[in-house]
Image (cartoon, rainbow, N blue to C red; front, side, top):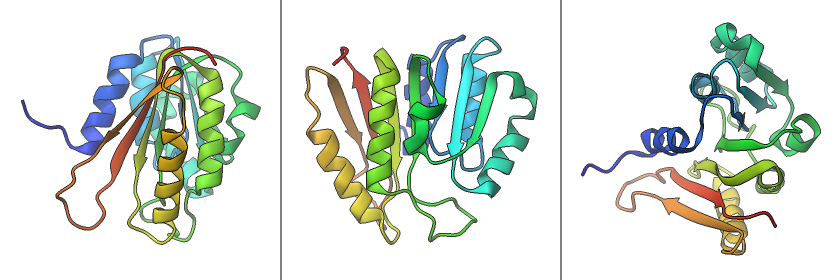
Length: 187
């Protein structure tokens, strides 16, 4: 067995749960890579909702999703507004926390809005669905978000969700890690 690195493991987790026809969320669209991957998984009968606060991210995601316009919604808003825009059950949501590479590094995800977004996703998530977060924490403000998220997910009742932390602990320079939240039943 070979251990998967963080980003390939995110795809493995999403592939294991997302089926054609599903509705899913990319809570941090960034350059649109996860949105495209999700669009390919849900196919023409599914739907991807992609969120980002930065105009450059929205533009990049729209370009990347050009062939998938009929089954995607790219929303120029923070992920904390998910419940204002998504009203259907979802099978998965993915987050890449931190800042948009190649853009303004002072625009970062925040623990309060990320937790609000997770709570929104949990309300929409089907039983057996997954929320996958890649936690980048080596930037200014990253430790605060990391610590807030870890406190939050540790407090979630195990009868409601199971939470996985996947990380490589012998790497230098604050390597990212995954938090995966699997919904076990409706609360």
